[in-house]
Image 1: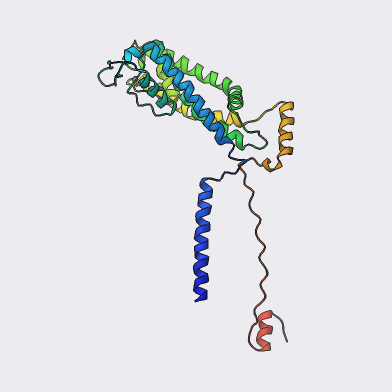
Image 2: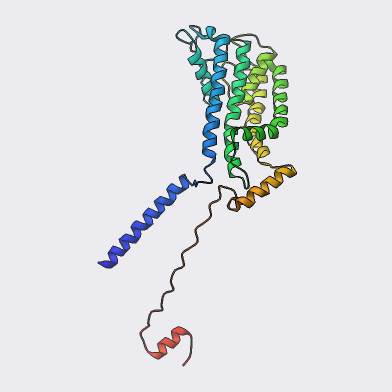
Length: 297
């Protein structure tokens, strides 16, 4: 009976340990390596505040065009005395990469604001990922909103300038050959607007390619917009500090040597030394014991 109880206890302990290990893998954060969480929440709230400001600007510019009017009978019109809630919905879904295209900009200024929203949504996720990455790099101090923003901008602005130049140049050339615009004409600004949407991975559906030229430029623009995101993370991850920054990094490592592998590194627990078991006595004759021990009489 005691043997069965011991086996049941051992099996129960194994199940509990396995469950605890799986829970820990979901939330493997200690006091030092979860410092990014507060900064991410702060950055998320500040980005949403910026998005609400853009929604207010969009509503003041062309909110009256959104009320009780639709485009080609397949876009939703705003209801009520103001379109602010619809404008905020438009900006919020764009920032979170879930724009449905039921609300679209109606004029030139609205298209500019929509391009800004596309850029904000594109960099929104990259910015939050940079906060987490900085918090896990060896020797880094706890990142803040402004320190992360400054480092990210300084690392990526040359390449993003090239990115935008390609988008604007190609869009201006192929604007008349892409699609039929609901508002405005198929000109260079509409081509830039279309290419900007595609490259920043947020087309609203108000323009779509229906010509060979449109298909030909959409594919490389989509590839460029997808591959540029990990490229920016690689640029930000490369650290090329000045001598003063290098000394500050070494000082941080001296003060916190436990972060030499990064805050995300969790030191494994030392195994508990097991007491040596005494050899069990073997029954049998002297000849059998000598044979088991490999000795001769």
